[in-house]
Length: 172
Image (tube, rainbow, N blue to C red; front, side):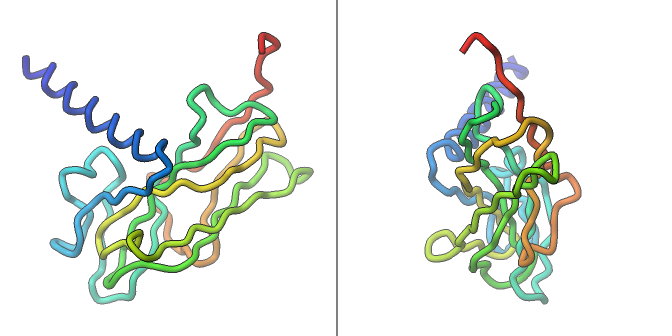
C-alpha cells in the first residue's frame, strides 16, 4: 500500500509539472527567501536543488531543459523547450535573458530566444520558475544543445540541455 501511495504522489506531482510546462503557463517552484535555497517540498522532483546567497544581487541559474515534443523531435519540426531558471542570489530576479540552441554542425545557424522575467513572473531569492521558450525549428539531424546566453553565468551541475533530432520514419 505504501508503494501505491508513493507512486500516486509521484504521478500527481509529475502530471502537475508536465501540465504546467505544456500549458504555456509559467509556474513557480521553490519558496522565497526562507533557508536560502529552493528546498520546498513541491519542487523536490521539479528542479535540482541549489543554494542562494542572500548577500549578492539576484543571479539567474539555468536548472533544467526539456524539449516539448512527446514523440521526440523530427527533422523539420517546430518545437518549444521548457526550462527552469532559479535565483541563486538575494533580491528578486527580473530582466531579459537570451538562450541559444546550437546545431550539431557548423553548417547550420544557431537559433535563440529571449526570455523576459518580470511582473508576476519574477523569481524570489532561492526559488525557481518554469518557462517555455521557442519555437525552434529542427533544421538538421543530430544532437543540438541549449546553452545559456551572456547574462546567465551559472548553469546547474546536473543541467543537460542536449536534444536529438532524428530523420523520422517513412510511415508519416
